[in-house]
Image (cartoon, rainbow, N blue to C red):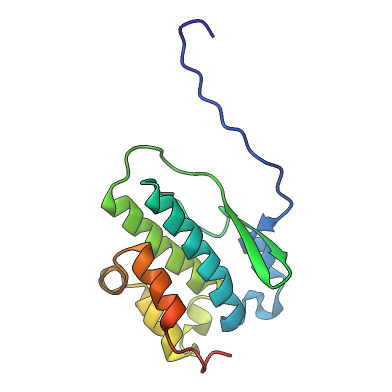
Length: 155
């Protein structure tokens, strides 16, 4: 275009489905903790990579995540990025709390929270934003926690 800015987005074809619909196929429309942790870990790793590049998503929820199980892995794609402005800490922190809300919803939400193992409840922190961010100030700290906490009670 002559002297005009053109913004374009090019995307790959992806055959996964929305996380919300995928979870709804499981008994009780929720994932078992072991499976939910693996899906959550992949989400956290993806968001960590986005944050390392000084971006953020700012609208993470089960309808904006596409999932494709592959062997023992879960391939996730984040769609519908909210804003491509300069990354601010509060926007990246919103991604942290939103990711934990996704984890909570995959586990069945309020109806199943009381029966979850204590290690899982520690991560979810009753969905109290201030407590979540005190425990996990960055995606890096959240990922490291997921890689090192004792979760034998979850299997």
